[in-house]
Amino acid sequence: MLGAFWLNVRIFLAAEAVILLFALLIAIVRSIPGPVFFPFRLVAIGYVDFFRGVPLILLIYMIGFGVPALGLQFFSNQTPVVFGTVALILVYSAYVAEVYRAGIDSVHESQVAAARSLGLTRWQSLRFVVLPQPIRRVIPPLLNDFIGCRRTPR
Image 1: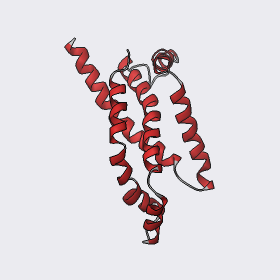
Image 2: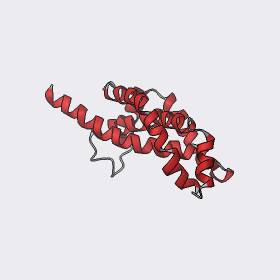
Image 3: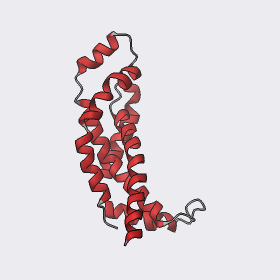
Image 4: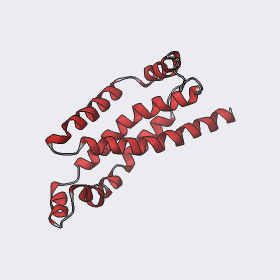
């Protein structure tokens, strides 16, 4: 029982670190303005909509049994723990990306306009002005997602 608990903790810590970074990337891509970035936004929207709609247990089965059945050399020596962690990352990064996106959208446009008027580029204003504000706002909802990721069925 104690070994299973520590395995659960290791999976949780590894998955959450990757989920936070991957979800932030998805949320940033989804909020990039301009017609040039429309294909990237479309891919991010499709990713979020698909993985939020697929039940986690179904994705665990699809990845856990489907990927090893492909017989690819790279995946042949992976353990079921790796496949379960990948399934958790795929599903929960979509949920966390929506939380990040809501936080980014909660920053008023005047903040971005003020940063741009000071001479910051779009990426600098995103990094130094926009992103620090929603990070504080999304901590409570992210704690809910962390609890949900930790309590997933196996």
